[in-house]
Every structure is written in C-alpha cells, then in structure tokens.
Amino acid sequence: MSTAYLLWGPPGAGKSTLKNVYGQNTIMKNTDDIVDFVCNPDTQDEYWACRKDEKTKSIDRYLNHLAVSQGKNLAIETTGNWYGKYELNGEMVTWAQELKKTFKKVIALVVYVNDVGEIWKRIQNRDQLSVTETQLKETYRKSYKENMITLIQDPYVDDIKVYDNSVCTPSLLVTKKGMSNATALKKSSCYRDWFLSQLENTSVSTCGSNYNKGVKIKF
Image (cartoon, rainbow, N blue to C red; front, side, top):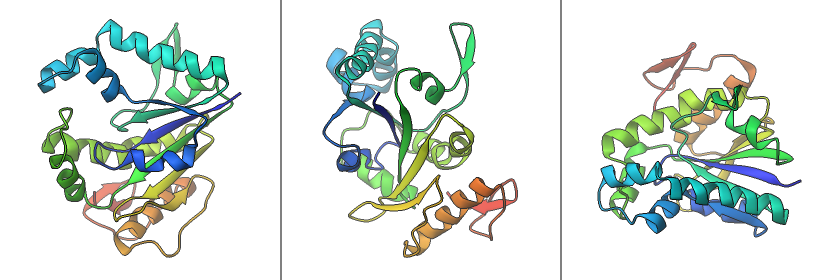
C-alpha cells in the first residue's frame, strides 16, 4: 500500500516547493486546479460554487481511485483551514482515519512561513481567487495553530514534517517524531518550540501575544 501526503499550509505558503519530498511516484491532487479545469471561475463566489459542483467532486474521487489502483502515492493539497471529525457512512472519522483505509501511511507535509505578510505579498503576485487578506490571516492562524493541535493529536497521522519556507529554500524545521532543527531562523524557532511543546503537552516561553493552553505565540 502507498502513502497519502497532506500538503498543508495557507494559500501562498509554497506547498509546490515540496515536490521533491513526496517524489515522482505520486499523483497530485490540487482542488484549485480541478476548479479551474471544471469552471474557470472569475470571482470568489464562482470559485466556491464550483468547489461544490458534482463534476469537481467526481474528479476528486477519481484521483483517489487512480492512486490506489496504480499503487502510487497521493499528495493532497489543503490549506489547513479545517481539520477534525466528520460523519462518513454513519461513522465519525478524521481525514487521516479515512485515508488509512486505503493507504499504508498518512504523512502531513507542512509548509510554514513565519510572517503572514510575506505570504500575502506572494499571493498578490499571482492570480489567487480563493482568498482575501482577511481570510488569509484567519487561515494562517487555524492552519498553524488551532488545527495543527488537532492534527498532532490524531493517532492516524503517522508523521508531521514541518518545512520552513520563510526564505528562498524550504528546510526541515521540526517533525512529529521529535526531530528539531537547532539552526532554524530566529522567528521560525519560536514556532518550532511551540510545536514540540504540543507533542509533550507542555508550555513554552513567551513568543507573542496570543495564548493557547498556556502557550504564547505570535501568528
């Protein structure tokens, strides 16, 4: 059985920079690309309407089937804006739990950028219909903080590898298995320490003005 990769991070974080990590024997699933193919939307309303279109959903399901039938890995892009249990066939499951029924491993590859302003600059340099600056800030917080805690606590996620893409080349920052980059950028090391504290269910020193279970960290 193959591996399902969750390419995790807000729009503009640079998830495509990790293609060398998940390798060539991988089918890529990008919902934005599917939406462009099906509807070619011009507005955010058209974009979100197309996300719910049955043609979009059918292509999404087919790519899952293709990966399984060909024995390939599947890389799924997600902003991390939502993660938790949902009902499927009368059972409450997480995304990773459902993927584990057909894939041997589920590994989250997180692309982290230590400044939301930097991500917004990147988005402004390309055609990005799916997010506004306000929505980006909300997704940034949920992706790297609230839903990251849920992801860490999900036993069906075999590993989480966080890559720092704050500068030109992404580098491994921290993992669920406890690897830690001692030479990380100063602004990124704060997030690294916060991540490690979640593995141990402990608190870390002051990092900013936002609180979470005794942890202060700026997002």
